[in-house]
Amino acid sequence: MRPDALLYPAPEGLFCPLGGFFVDPVRAVDRALVTHGHSDHARPGHAHVLATRQTLDIMRLRYGDGFAGAEQAAVFGKEIDINGVRVSFHPAGHVLGSAQIAIEKDGMRIVVSGDYKRRPDPTCAAYVPVPCDVFITEATFGLPVFHHPDPMSETRRLLGSLKQFPERTHLVGAYALGKAQRVIRLLRDAGYDRPIYIHGALAKLCEYYVSQGIELGELLPATIESRSDQAMFHGAVVVGPPSAFADRWARRFHDPLPAFASGWMMVRQRAKQHGVELPLVISDHCDWPELVETISELKPGEVWVTHGREEALVRWCELQGIEAKPLHLVGYEDEGD
Image (cartoon, rainbow, N blue to C red; front, top):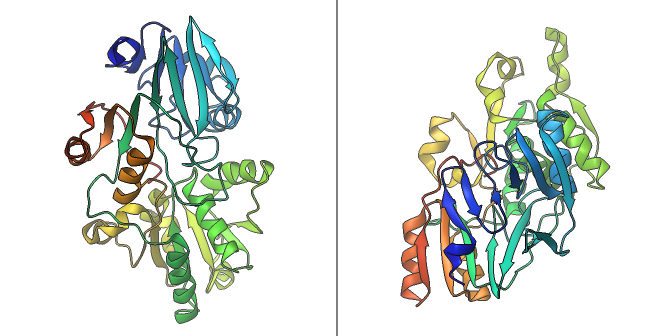
């Protein structure tokens, strides 16, 4: 079987005609398989959604009870038959509940990795390599210049800043799903045991992570109702979505020190554009060495490259003698970078 007879890019997203389903469709469809809960991959309005239990729960938290007409929970490693096509979900290591999706028919197996990372992260199940004929990989940081530092070393930079500026409120921008909880857990693992204050937009997701056994320590609401409240935030860590730090809410804190946790903080111009004083290079995606390491480990017959810096990774594959092509999928951003 040719790979594109099993899966090919359509305007809605990756489509399996034999199974009659889409993977991470960007518009409402009859049957959607969803890799993880970030809004560019998990959209509401599908008639039927198949995803891990945690991803379904996260979609409900973000979109409400009516996020889909029907839902089905996938268990890691367990095969599901969809119109004669075998489908299985495997850990991707991106955020809680994130999965790679293996699609198999007549001896042809395609693995859609979704978003994935290889670094250790106690807030989600670790990436598991899945042998395949075709590997579909993201390339968010698919340029040789991207070599991400150890996330714990970046966390220690934040702790060092707290010691250097003990009166300033450290505002850490981190995306609501995955990155915020990972930053909080990194601080705890580094020995920070003071309360961490969180923006209201993070509360439900943090509560859900805790309900899934992810220890985050004492979290308190980052609420300032009067000028006297400012004193409690002197030298404190406040975590919130990056968008919140651009409005008046952030200016209420005492001498705020803006930080941002993202793989994009390697790019100085991005940090400058966001007014970031303390850029923290903490990514939930693979950097260049991890992308090429993964492909080298899997040894697939073909590599299809989706959203990100596609051409460089395609060229690297070709130089290794691996057939590769860009998919040029649209509608996927970097919410969880």
